[in-house]
Length: 211
Ligand code: CO
Image (cartoon, rainbow, N blue to C red; front, side, top):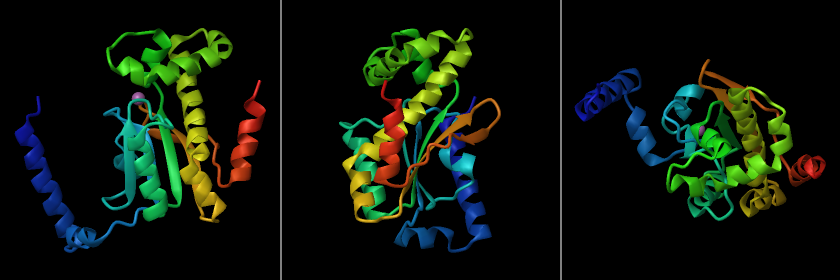
């Protein structure tokens, strides 16, 4: 079992190695960060954002919460999005879900875990909206995975629907919102081909889903 001491030892080795490779690695980062990407992912320990996409400190702005949700009243998530888009001027917002997500599974199974159930409420509503499709999937793990995909699609729409992203598009800022999903079983990312880069694209993507 790893102890807290191990983490500090690891950190010393990691920092020393980074400086050996690039002597001004940290001193350069003190002055500014210029990430091109905002990552909105799940808090799950098996989905480490920078490691998955091979990016270094300074290259990825990150927001993570349970089940990678973008909720219009969540000031934390909105503040990250606003700062990333308006101040850092990231070019890409990536909503990255993952298969076998514990949050999505809990929402699907009506499991009770305390306060977190409130946070997962929007996913339970999503489950109800897609009840018929989900009921047609016999295998439980496959049903969880399908709801994980539906969740990514909905969160991409939520990002695209924020005043932050719409205002950026209105003023002609280059910004693409992506929907990806990660397989914790194989370490691979999949682009769900949900990318949106304008108000027109966001509205077109929304229209056919009304039923
Ligand atoms: Co998760």
